Image (cartoon, rainbow, N blue to C red; front, side):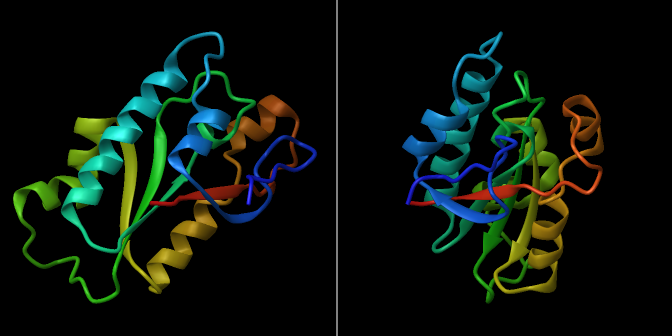
Length: 156
């Protein structure tokens, strides 16, 4: 199913599924600068690393990157959803740790990443948080302060 946008050109509320190709088509286009293209290239690299490191995890994308009205998003916000049975405080192999550590993801890929277990309260809390349109964008685009937007779950 194609991504659905509302009359404000924001993703309709909720989590929408999209392939990497759909994300490229909707969000990785030149807009004043090549910032979106560079962010997408980093996203593609991150997703490749995630695919090699974990079985069954999901990546949910948020932030100004999924708001086509923002010409130059600063970064991409992500929720890395690991299977419910993975202990987030447990030992990870180095290549896995580099993907679950918010600090490492920020350094390596320039993303803000939150790692949660599937079905956890933390997952729901971060989804609710990231569904809110940042106040600075509400001011800039004349949106109500309590505006909501959708998120994108990357399909394998």
